[in-house]
Length: 198
Image 1 (tube, rainbow, N blue to C red):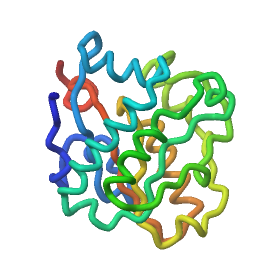
Image 2: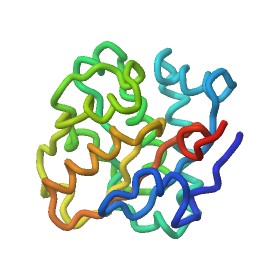
Image 3: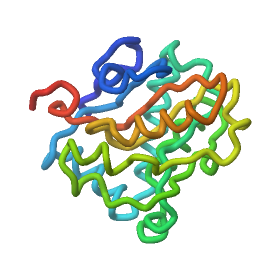
């Protein structure tokens, strides 16, 4: 697997991509390119119902994060949520399964219902990079801010491209919650999106 080695690095390209105010750490587990075998892994668990693959990859990623001092004090693992309509059509949230695997290895709690998606938006894959930022404006909310207060949250997603979805999640949490620390873990990135090259 073409692992990034980012988990032990405070400053790395994943962190650089989303280093908006308040994000402490960010990591990505591996690189993939469209058409590669690793692209097929993501496609399999994202669109073909292989939730077990997402969970297993989450456990592997969790072990990588566990070996890094940067993620030793995580309190809650929080997946980027799907809108209920998309959850019904897909059958499950792949980021929740990745998060479950990470939480199991880190030995911390999983929170899947406090950060919610309140607006249905079309898939980000249908938009240009510029349009993706508009597509995610105002789509998230926090149900109970006190659950996240004074916690170090690990926000988890499957793939990092423009960073628009993650940044909207982070901004929503920061607006609604006091004294909350946020780190980010994404399973995969393309070399093009994160390094500007293939």
